[in-house]
Length: 148
Image 1 (cartoon, rainbow, N blue to C red):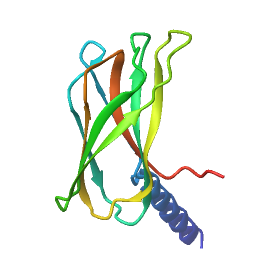
Image 2: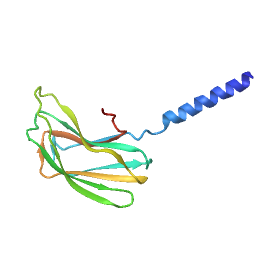
Image 3: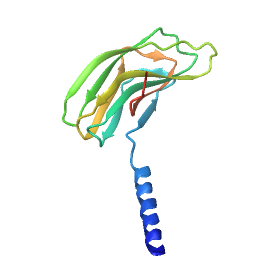
């Protein structure tokens, strides 16, 4: 009986470890810009292993006091594993800093989207003109946020 309890406990520990090591589908990837000016396209690859769960996709921008623009116009290009290509304009309205300390802002791009194919998704963020004061740009793909 004691051996059975020990075996059951061991199996439970192994099962919990396997679940805790499994990916949650959360991904945040950032790329630094050159000399705090975002002027080049930045590409991000997301490996999708779950083709049924919903995800939120956000653009992430880190910036400092050198940012003086009112908005940032960019193009987002997405390529799915089945080679479907979507390109669309997007505008970021980044608030100015009052305290002059660097800040990070997230901008919702898509809510509750299902990435319907397993494999590599490519996202390319391209500013239409160079933007000073932006030190990093990125993309965050996360589980949907519950909002009331």
